[in-house]
Image 1 (cartoon, rainbow, N blue to C red):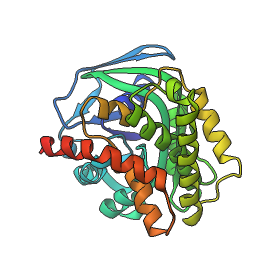
Image 2: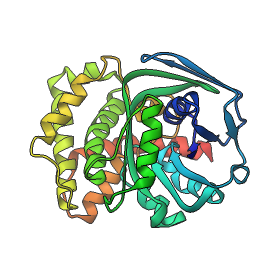
Image 3: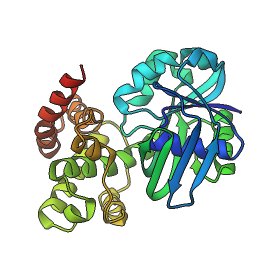
Image 4: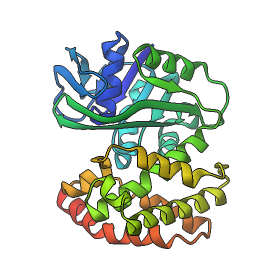
Length: 305
């Protein structure tokens, strides 16, 4: 199976690195200068991939069987346009971004038949070119066809990931699984970015803990209005997941905002606000968090040009 990994940051570098280290046929597609060694420092065990296949020229890759889309959420449309030369008759593109909109963005570029749903779990970041640090969480990937139908191509991808030592599965309902992750990532991102402290600080304070619970309730209301069947104890489960995070954990959105970089604010809190408006659901806490963070986001993007 030929696999392309688009992006080599914390997500792409880790999962692509595990695949490459297992002997899978993997090519990293990057924007900048290719790297000639991939080093992953991981709480699950360090490893190095010597001379991985890396290119910044997608047409040279040829057709692949699967693409793991591992760029930031706002980069998905452009990244998908760049990999059109990689798309064969049965190629599947699996987005691993934080958010709900990537599958439709991919479908709009390469066709719905090539788009899948997907999500991952990992706390990892880029420490330097070709150098990834995985600092927490049991890494996993979930993926599924958008109609939740049987999928031989995704089964082959999951088999490759499992052989590489990655927990991977096709859940019964990929949309439900994506919403479950969205419930988990948005409160931590928003409150972490506002407070600029690690998760254990804000989850230990009644004031900010209540804010997280209110945020989750609002997202649950949006999900319900859009037809997502989430379990009755979704709030409790989500808070348990937040409580299980390492004490010093931060989200990628939080780190990007603290570092003065463009973030996934629009794909997370912005998406909640947009979907809520479309579904006539009130989300005052999410709207407040989004509006408070928006000035910094726009300032950073204006400097980026």
